[in-house]
Length: 183
Image (cartoon, rainbow, N blue to C red):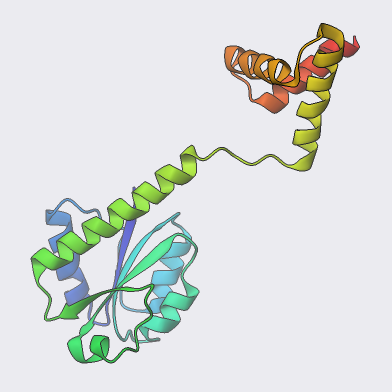
């Protein structure tokens, strides 16, 4: 699940926003008053959203954004004067103050869905093999092609099918083929 961290200079404001989000079904991982606290909390999480104001007690939003760990996005809440001045980076999602509850909930929900979709896509993407693994699979295919008179495509399908049947990955299956053929 995507983690949400709220970082505002006034702890009461941060807790109020936390309560709004929690009542709307959005879990909040933590509430902070400084950027350093937010970064420390974010380091222990995989990915998420940091909701912050323009200025914390120890840094401004841009410093916090620059130090965010990979997988975290920022939602900046600031006055229209600051947001309209063109100072805010395009990567940062913004909400103007005074805040409308409906806008906050919808924006956070949209950001969570985007992050979850990105993570799902990344998880479904096949893992890239390193050169040693590619060479191992190629060697196993060559042995199958020479000994069993298969085409490269047939050898690949054979390794793939054995891999699926045994519940191992293709590299492990290729190692088994090499071990069996050399014996």
